[in-house]
Amino acid sequence: MLVAERQQKIVEIVNMRSSIRVSELSDIFSVTEETIRRDLEKLEKEHKLSRSHGGAVSIQQQESEVHFSDREITNVIEKKAIAHEAAKYVKSGDRIILDASTTAWYMAKILPDIELTVITNSIKAAIELSNKENISVISTGGILLEKSLSFAGPLAERSLETYHVTKTFLSCKGFDINNGMSDSNEWQALLKKRMIERSDQTILMVDSSKWGNREFSHIASLQDISRLITDAGLDPVSVKALVDKKVKVTAVPLPKRG
Image (cartoon, rainbow, N blue to C red; front, side, top):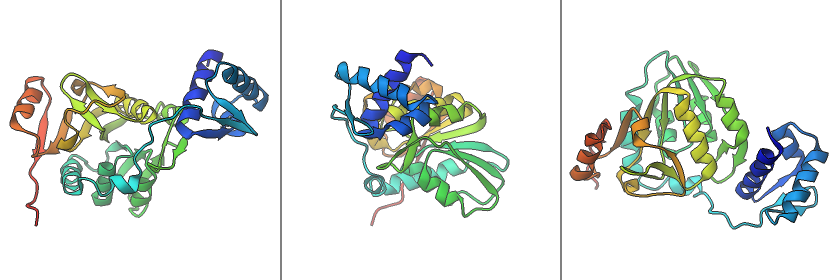
């Protein structure tokens, strides 16, 4: 990795984490702590971060991820219906990726205890799957994002380079015809992009409330996915627009409320 590339990654990590220690950065980039200190000194002079005792802190107000506990209670009926539909596409012997979305977590809860290998950056999904003895679980590792209870960053991205899977199941915070999939968190977006690249098929699981949203970080176009699973709340005009773009759409009916 070039020096300039490493320093750019350092700024991204500091902004994502708000603060980080020199020793952690040294481990992440496999360079000495003295090298990291020189990087931090240069970046501070460029007003890209601020050095602290033993590390660095962000000087940029970053958009925070929504806490998992908040996402867990949002559009629950839609997410569970989508997760149940997505689970139908999992067969014994598959090697799959699950992202750190709440929909993927709901899917992990209902997956049958069959022979599977599951790679995930989600702590919640990994814990859920640990109770199923026939499922082998691989964590991406990486930088812990406390609010989403997930891993991301360069280490997580590099870990995926080792693997090839049959199916990836992921969600996002925004999707539309012209801009494709997007996420508010840059590191999650980059990791989802890698997940798509390492898979034969990608199944996007996203409820209709995200339709038309365009978030900060682009993931991929809708043509890069194998199937979109959403809920019946997506209007027929939008469904037709997707189908016209050769996107395979499954709109799951929802149980009646109350």
